[in-house]
Image 1 (tube, helix red, strand yellow):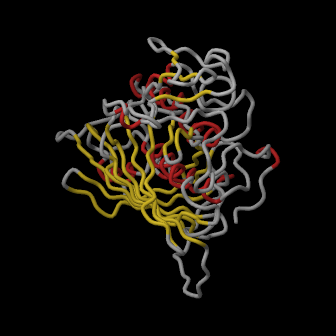
Image 2: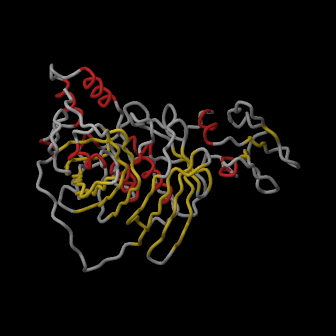
Image 3: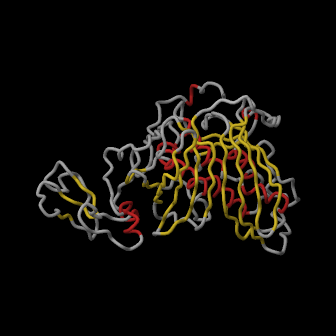
Length: 411
């Protein structure tokens, strides 16, 4: 394992937990009916299936502390005087009404000075709407103004993990990105309990925005089983993270170059201002101003920013899923740095989980690209614990489109 938690990172345990299969909706979250039908444009009707949320314990919805939605109204079902009903709004409208679903001041934000990882308090803290229906929100949006793929993978795995027993642990997942995500609205995650077996269980997850799927995923879970058949590769020999500069320190070093062109200075300042909840220390950082082709391999130490602590292993796997997509596909671009990138997006993403780990402890991310062609690139990655144990294996293919005319200079 990755050693004891340093004192400066110790803090109270996080609020996120993976709820067991069949758990009732989280207290304080209104049970929602007919979400997907409303998103597809048809509102379900009939006894026992209203497209509304029930509020009990008060004579009016306003006395229960419910915000009145713009253009909405409260009304009582036939035969009921004590219970009030709030007209259901789709995820976008509920977000606008201020239902953040996250702790602390503001939607999904931890309180100031909170040392817990924002990945736990916000990004991966899904709101349960129904037994197998969840809503996720966004913390960091890349400059492309598309949703970060790692966020969708991590949130989908959280949703799948809430539909299995506590003793089952994820061992693999396979995902496809089918549409670009809209950062202006939340994402709904619909879970299907595909199979529950004696040793393995499969859960299928569909991420939905504007009534259409943007992402599909299948995750497989396994009850712990021992076996004498064991082997693994050997971890690369690299300097420890304590001897390396962070990505922010490297950018600051580049910004001190008086010959740096203004447009690249603005670009680096923009990167530096991004609120990415990951700590990164490149082992052999490439020269950002060099256009010479490089070997399609890179190594960097990564960990979640903030404290997570000892908790259900599924939580750390969800965090690792978020981390695994950051700068991953860029490995395939290293031999082609002379070209200007027009379009770069992930097509699919797969992960295999081998051994327990702490996502808030440093792990070595070994990335390589064995092939690129046909406007696609393939990358593979391995996450190593500091003690040399292979914890996670990743693979991804993405679309890569470049300008046909190579760049002449970046200075």
